[in-house]
Image 1 (cartoon, rainbow, N blue to C red):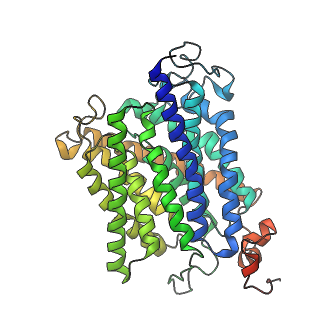
Image 2 (image 1 turned 45 degrees about the horizontal axis):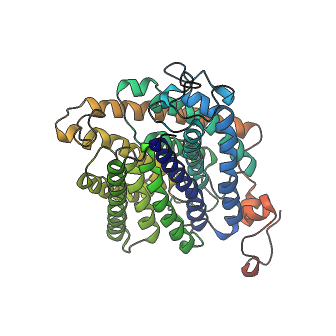
Image 3 (image 1 turned 60 degrees about the horizontal axis):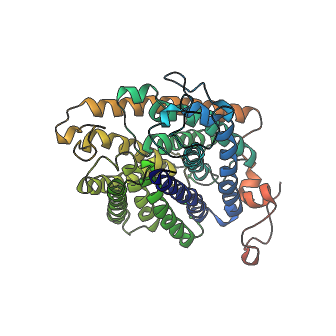
Length: 435
């Protein structure tokens, strides 16, 4: 077998495993930022969501995203019924079915697994934003719909030969395809669910509901930072040593810059260097660099990260001001900086870094063309995902219901939804509230 195919396949599978490992990071971050009484619930959601995503993406999402079809969605290769062999792309058995991925020479199932872990990430983003008050079943149903229908349509538009790709929009590793999609879905859910009980006082002031374990959240952020070295460099889908080295450095530089700027701005605005803001600043930098990591220089990645860290702090404060309750800051991290990161391609891209791809962005003499294409993609995806996600949440609300009872919310979803608690030896509640 061709040595390049072997090496490329190993690279794709190893980086996919790193992205899969990010599920642990999300579970730790989200549970750490939640109250102890909801810890089992958030852990269970983060665990089961990847299983749900696996089935949803295999059954329908993969074909809609990468199957040949029209500029809006794939129509061939649905349900993995055709082209599901394990031959390398040098074979012709499935070239005509999933031709959008014919540029990489790894086996079909390696391509599928790599794209699957990305789909699972989009669904996981939603979990934290709706934490503390959503019904377990409703979250599972929403996740299945997101990964089987909503996410893959956007993926087809940008990565599968759809109209945004043809328009000239670029999103190397998913600031829009993964993070903005998850962020828009999370925003819709948080708005329709409403805030947690006690989050806002009658005078409109914010009543902070503190996370129960920042140690867990910090470890989880480190896991996510590590996983991003699979997320971004792995999107080359080949062991191109120059590209993956450069992408690792731009990814890390943006994360570091976002960490520092979020720490500083929270220190200035809140009076103290808030650890939660520091952690989200790191994640904001990572989300923001995801679209442009292959197309920008290291100095540009630092600037992108610095701005992302500032944006996430302002966004967390801003969402609170408009009474949108997001316990973990997922919308501020993934939506706001997913949008910002996508636009950064149109601002900071340099043709000399990856010739024959994006061309130069606005700041490097390329004019407005690329930025307009990026903005068009942001708007199209935002409208589509927010509308479809809102309709899905509303249908679930009218059928199975999406919010637990007030008693269950006060007592904790661990007891009400799972009949279990995360810390039985340290329980402080001697009784539960009944009506």
